[in-house]
Length: 262
Image (tube, rainbow, N blue to C red):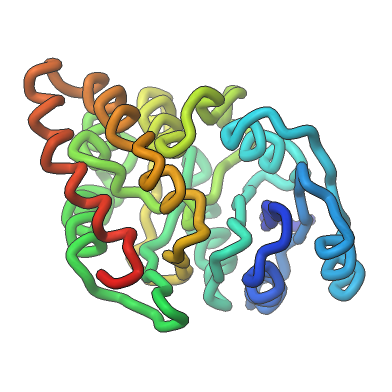
């Protein structure tokens, strides 16, 4: 029985969808692959037919609702929500499954990542360096189950790249994501999951690429000024309000890193 599923979350007509699908099919571990969508159309159907993939169609309620729907669509213990703009290196699934088999109490397992800017892979920039520093405690296996460690790595910012994450489905309580947020739905999920018993497993290899471009949901929500308000809400779960506001002021400057020119 296969242990892992990539659920490719497809939305409207993305120029990058086919590249994402090719990357999850070209894995050294043979994962299940599904397409989940709330905007089914001829474009998505044509690609699904080309690669002989099943489409699971849902009803759009929110971004968080779409993410939960994608997780529920999988039948395997491990589920990765593959964002249609991103790509996965060939050994991503293999590394995830091997890490899970070593620590089956894991809640989430995730890899390091690189960014794709103007079709180029970027492995080092200020944003990536900061995230790697924050995530350092999870490099030590004896710390990955500690509640204070799981919370420490996300209390100064969202250091976990959402599309790099694989969920152990049986460890989840739905809803996993916040339906009333538009930008920090993943950071909310990590904060909630950090309070549960189980491990946050980090694989310190860059095994997936997160695409940064003008049409991405992250860029759109930053441009719409949703992020700063939601960031403050999350910071207040870790810090007194006065300090959360100060942190939020500095953290908001990181929004500039989602611009293509940076």
